[in-house]
Image 1 (tube, rainbow, N blue to C red):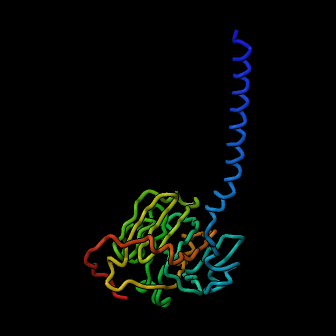
Image 2: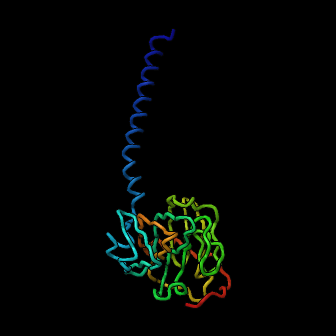
Image 3: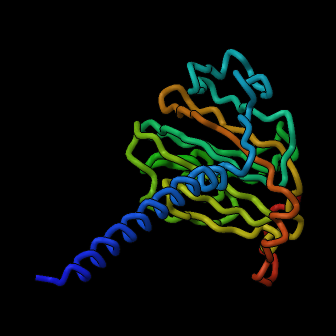
Length: 240
């Protein structure tokens, strides 16, 4: 048996410990709103506006049902604005054999295959219809920038894609994995500045579905943290 004094001290210690746990719990609860706010500190906008109100497209080509858009003929849908430093977030669902492009920095929409930067979208077994080469999802088409393979999900499943472009450096993150990193200012003699963003429509037999397409402008204060560390001679790519 403990002396009465020791028993009393133990009870007091238990009560003090309980109060500490309560205070810690309250602090965590108070900090939660700030954590949520930090995660949502950026302002995102629908890339093509509400109900495609900020898009240039053929109404007979692109169809919206709920928050999902898709195309039947091979027609592109474009933003009305041009972008330079941005972060784009979207989901896509590729049917079997589907191959398409997320088009960035487009300077001439009538000649977009040669006047833009294209992020390849494809299912696991996609084939480039122009070159006949394997089309790995997330690669930069036409510039020899390969992507990490095996990240895209099976046909019919939804994939998450985020593209970040800052000071000419393009990062492609798919399903939580960084698949492509490219500094076009280090590789291209005349890299594009700002340009339109678009999606390539695909053939009816191998369509894509897209949803939750949004964009945010990266402010100048954010671009200061990005530096171009790689210094090398430009490759022989097409001149803009």
